[in-house]
Image (cartoon, rainbow, N blue to C red; front, side, top):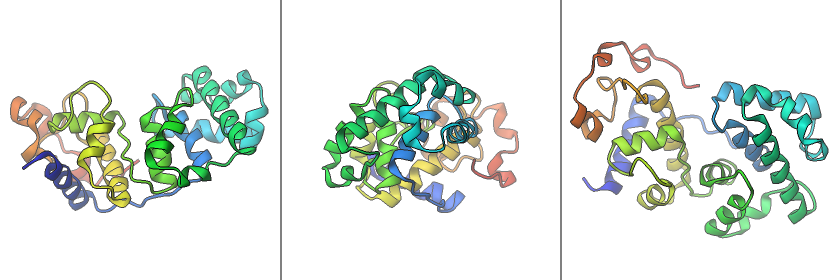
Length: 236
């Protein structure tokens, strides 16, 4: 099986095991802020930080005008608040400077490479954040890889452990936004529930048969623990 075929096999196996996930499309500016808040934290703290931010300022326009320290205080629950506050302010200011108001709809008229370049020119916005905005706000075919996806695809032998995984993963996947959305969400679920950084639960993993990490490490004691998949655990 070549690498492109393996990517499709992974997607099909994850859909077969978990089912097709519900994909929620978001306003692109809100999505950009949420994704910045998600850096180095979990979804619960990301959502708490966003709720706190909106409770404090009510609108994204007001966040743009607020002192950076006040934004940082509002998002403290998400961690790295000073860095994230700076990134959020700079992102909102860049959008307004370019468009006159907070609107990213122009990205849909750009080529995919131009849209990625525009977003990643914002300080604190990398390929993953740009990809999430493009894929989950515009259904543009750019596959974003977080730490879970990087770990899984590295263990599957598709990318190296270090370096930017986006060029290679986007090269291997067909330019099909729905497929990319499903694979992104389901690979993150697998990484959270089964393919842990330490002591992954290989026995119930639907990707086990083609996993190079499993082939080289063999089964571990953790494999005998009942997994969230076997318990019917839900995606968070």
